[in-house]
Amino acid sequence: MKKKKAFTLVEVLIVLVVIGALMVVLIPGIVNKSQEANKQSTEISNHIQEGYAEYSNFKDGK
Image (cartoon, rainbow, N blue to C red; front, side, top):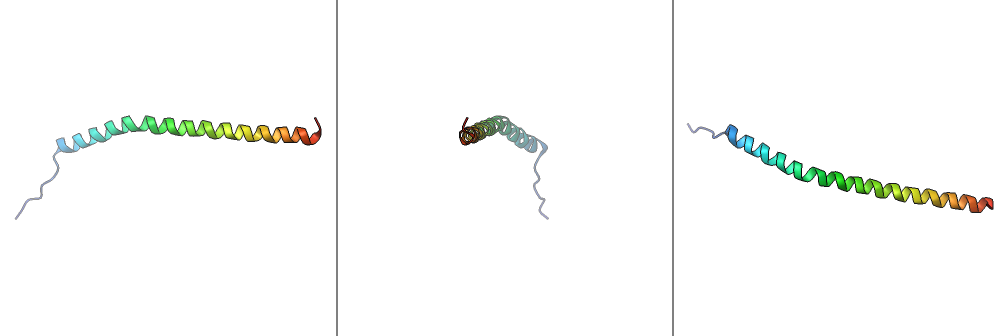
């Protein structure tokens, strides 16, 4: 009978450390991109609301 070769504890720990290191490097970049997109969408929304206010004032004759 052949024995199945299993992963050793050291191999599993090394894989977990590598995955953790990649997450530490990648997560801040993803968070910054989402914050920039959120800021940009907020600015666009504010400009749209300013446009509505301008139109309302123009329509009312102010």
